[in-house]
Image (cartoon, rainbow, N blue to C red; front, side, top):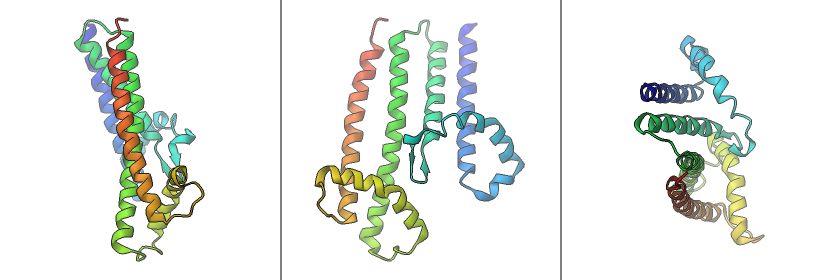
Length: 198
């Protein structure tokens, strides 16, 4: 009986996460805002998504990564329900391991997204030189990633003046290394927690 209830709850949470993803994508389309279906999705998803909207460290310029936390939390809850549906016991260590894995998935998603943005911007610089210098979209992108590039590159170069291209390369390399080390450390910690006898 309980296994069936947990299986249904896992499915409901997974479905809700998919609906939230659709809602997030629709926010990127200005004309979709006034469509009745979009308003309906907003009434279902926005109360939950807004709980995470004010997290400052998840905002970088005009980029807001707070929906990633909401979606990862839904994923963790769905995984816990699925495990309860398929297992006779749920240990504290396993729950802590799942929560830690959720935290890492948010961090890894943000790191991956930033790496992709930085690589795209570096390719634009290498291929097109200054042909994008007056483009408002590129200007907005530089506003979003500029502070990150500067912070990371200053860690290694100090106050020495470097080009934006060099800063991008340093930032990309640093984020790739952080992503790799983080993945390794978090997988070790999750395995340790999951194997605790509690």
